[in-house]
Image 1 (cartoon, each protein chain N blue to C red):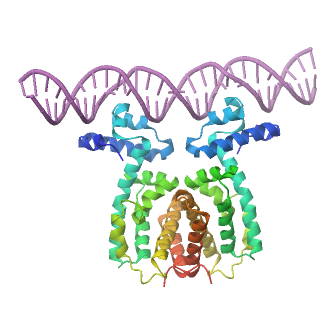
Image 2: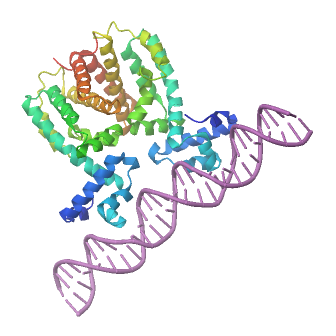
Image 3: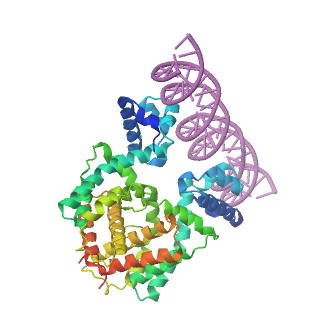
Length: 204
Length: 204
DNA sequence: TATAATAAATGACACGATGTCATGTGTCAA
DNA sequence: TTGACACATGACATCGTGTCATTTATTATA
């Protein structure tokens, strides 16, 4: 997490810094991003950056979570909309991610994140479902929304694994969209095929 | 790919270099590995490294593929053993990965790879199933081995997606084994639960 | 064998990035 | 007015990368 001084910053200065960092992390993936570029664009001295953040990663994960939180909220809305049908909610989330315009700010940021998902980054994305996370108030918010009646499970244990499976597959579809440079339609088509396979089962 | 000069190297020197690189990539993940450490351990001048490899990544992916090829062969053997039952073959592959001893050379190398899977690294792991890959002679070897009769699919298209799904889930289970520091037994248990869910379908 | 041509080895160097730290500046309470 | 404290600043030590001019070895050719 950013240090206190960061949050105490006058809003204009803080926003300029955030914009600068976003630009850098949109330009290249985390490992190649340079603090030098960020401070240059933000027009702050190098030492100040370390006054606000521990290091590059600290800034990165802060921004990633910020970006992701918006989508989490939309996901919860979708769950409500579809009466707890988790497949429909995931489909809408997937579509939401496809809608991102190449010109929009977040597009390349997200792309760089997805093309370089490590377990750390995936954790940020899937934290919402993680019981062990401190931030599990969101989980408590979500769990009761999900309609388990239509799920082919025997216990709570299996429910957890279903979520795991769906997120893995959704993720892979997103990554593939970017690596294979797929159109929205193509990506969605593949996603739907795989979700249907998941629903009906792979085995005869 | 490493340059020709690398393969022309006397075996002793080449092995020393390989060992040094493996050690470094076992110590830390790719992004933190340093060529300086490698050349120091291998006792070659810095310039020589660039005589043999394009850069750090070149060396890394060469080693990763080398490590992985052995397992691919075992996977094919498993497919034969279980008369093309892809689930059984994946299970045996998964178990094989769990067996790796912490003391063995490859353990930390593999761990660092798995904890930092990007799409690039995942490509190396899943290349065996990739039609578009030049190296698809392996795919041609595998495809006819798989028994499609027990798979709940209508066409070739769906078959591709089944493979995608199974690999995603297998991967996630492996990564989780390392991040959560699970025992062999625990990891396998989770994996089997998820595979059974995949087989029977998630939806009622 | 002598010589030219080609391949490989070498390490100093230019460049750029990171994180730290001593010093400077501003603010606020006593 | 003064001292304490938080924050700002940029020079610097350190380390890592990739290049290149030079040297050394190897191979081909006459």
